[in-house]
Amino acid sequence: MANLKEIRNRIGSVSSTMQITSAMKMVSAAKLKKAQDAITAMRPYSNKLTQMLVNLSSSIDFENIFLKPRKAENLLVVCITSNRGLCGAFNSNIIKKCFDLADNHEGNTSFFCIGKKGVDILSKNHSVIDSNNEIFDELSFEKASLIAEVLMKKFTDKEVDRIQIVYNKFKNAATQIVMQEQYLPIENTITENNQQESPDYIFEPSQAEIISELIPKSLKTQLFKSIRDSYASEHGARMTAMHKATDNATELRDQLKLTYNKARQAAITNEILEIVGGAEALNS
Image 1 (cartoon, rainbow, N blue to C red):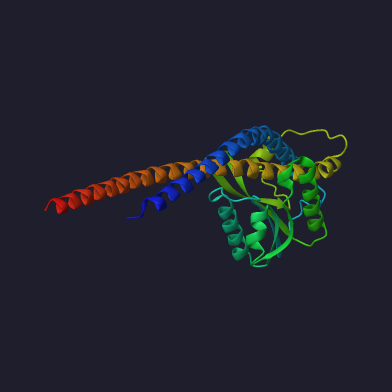
Image 2: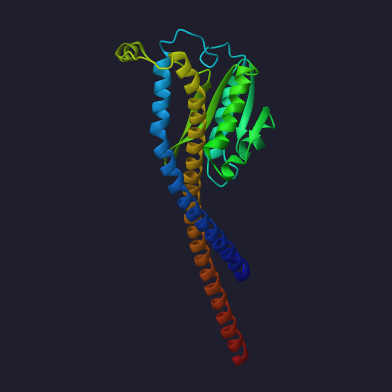
């Protein structure tokens, strides 16, 4: 059995760890509330904007570079992770999905990483053409727009033929859903029934001008929504992970205290037996 000093040191170490994980849980819980409200408010706008773009482009009679499909020889994957760890499987699930995409794609696959964890792992085995880790320091639509413009330029310059986004979609604090969405070219997902039900509109200015103006805004909004989703998911995952870590540390501390009490009781019993044995030896 370990000596009493060693057990006391372990109890102190576990108690310190428990205080840290508990503090991190409270910090993530506070940040999660703000991030959850932001993504919940943004989703209806983003979904409606995407729906408008799909409805308008379904009957368009001109070619737009963002709408025209290509043979996907060069795939660019936008990998959205976090800058810090201690958030369970949040980052590993995204990295695993990115590896699967690279393995299943027959052509060249490169990565644009948003978040330090993605850069650290993917750069060891794959081509990371660019990254942005500072956006989470002060998340804003303007910063996301700059990244979206870089992605759109790479597509229009034909450096890449297809762009996909991989991120964690926020469902609740305990659940994050790994999402894979096509960013460019824009997919026309409207069905024949929906196309027949959609009413005829009079466009002012022309339909082509509206779509040309709407596409960049929609792409910027889509990317910002994905980053917002990932940001909320990160704090939810970290809050859950730190909650579990605190519970485990509490359980381990209680077990160590029980072991300490047993060891101390055994030590006291041995001392009493030694005293009694010594007294009997003197009397004999």
